[in-house]
Length: 452
Image (cartoon, rainbow, N blue to C red; front, side, top):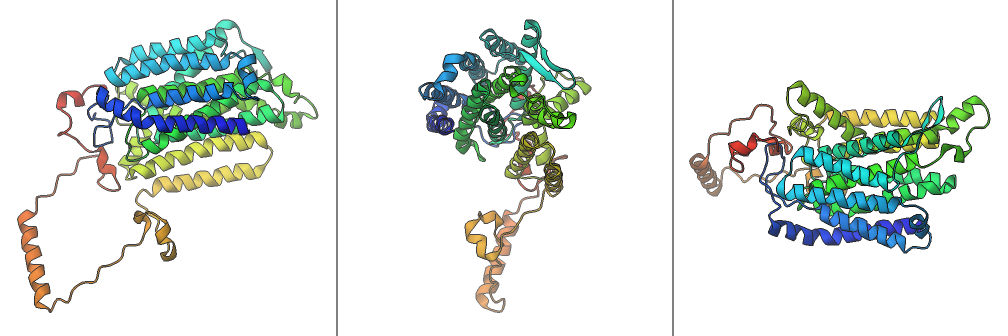
């Protein structure tokens, strides 16, 4: 565990330290696109944050290769090299897209090629544990197609959710934390060494996200861009593929006892089929809804719009930070809920706890304008927006100075007052949601109507 944590810390430190210079490089290189119609930020922000994340990935794998207990992962498995090869290819495609905005079909082809490169080097699904059937061995073509499909879906799901400051990095970090705890339990509790590469991938992925988040939280100083979102999506998919198709369920020796006990004991075997879906449940749901929505309107599935889940949270009145925190909450609930169920599937308290937390999440969704206030004694420990407003003492209206000041203020207000701006249909004007309003001064009509 100490070596995994060291790898995580080194990855986070390298990513954090390189993000500042990368931001300056992005500004000099001109990787600061104009505000698009679907964007929620108000000022042009540099991209290419994926450069720092990629070098953090390389640093983490390099350190792990020189550690005593993790060196054997590189000696006995080719999966780390396969991950690095696919990550380098998808990273280069993302960098080109951040600078030149390449076509969506070209990016899709690059994603499939990156997945194929990992398959050629051994990172593929070899078998699947199917409930009621057992372990089903896959042919080479079946494993290749399933691996490529999982990689492409995960990459695009993460890319779709990257629409608010800190959203994609935070959600993937939460998913990676749940996945790390799950794979480490398989490796440590059951003694299955085949789960070690997936545990290493999850630790490195957490470091990449944690190192980038301080620069990307609202208001963001730099965006990860497609070079970052596609990269972390590929690393997340690589971990899921490794633990799903490389760990043999028969090694766990769970087929013993009564039928009911066997079903409960087999939960850790079936969880690999569900865990990759739970950790990207929200991004995958956003991806499916976007494809259905655009196809229903007669548009291309790759056409950009403002109908994503984070856009809808802003439109109903949530602030930028609160929308991100709500997405964090649901991601943690789904990921760690599946993790807790895999540990003890027979406990009713786990199910009740998940139901209770889901109810809390629904209440948070329905109260976009509710702002909690801290008690008086705790106001000095919380941000100003959570403190109670203090009423300013009004001057005595009977004094001549007060009368003169009031008259002067009223006269200046009448002279400088402008007519109120017309409200835009479908856009609320509270709690930061005005960021979704029109930006005609920052973008011309021709670019506003493009799919990019």
